[in-house]
Length: 105
Image 1 (cartoon, rainbow, N blue to C red):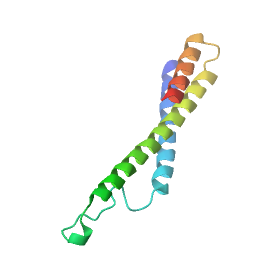
Image 2 (image 1 turned 120 degrees about the horizontal axis):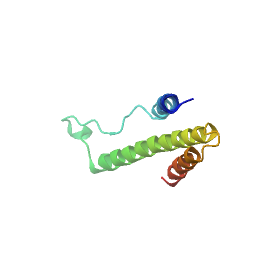
Image 3 (image 1 turned 45 degrees about the horizontal axis):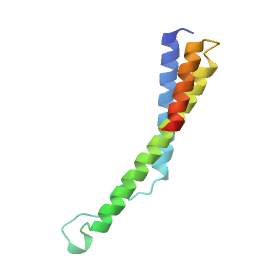
Image 4 (image 1 turned 60 degrees about the horizontal axis):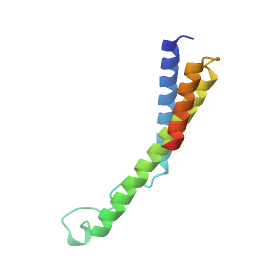
């Protein structure tokens, strides 16, 4: 398998994992959305400071979930790179670097 086929394979694998895991993350979220207030002109339904804080918390949690998925995909991609390196020390070192950076991040 030459370098072009490996990069295409890893790109497709990465895309499949991102698609599958983001569908799981979005399906697990409640249907309220990121910002909980209604935001219309009726006084009782206006956004308050509490709604802003809850909205910021929801955005941070959403971003964290996405980053966890990206880290898992990077670890899997690094492991696959390590497995298919077939003794190539340069590719093994780059795979180890990918895994270390994903764990560090």
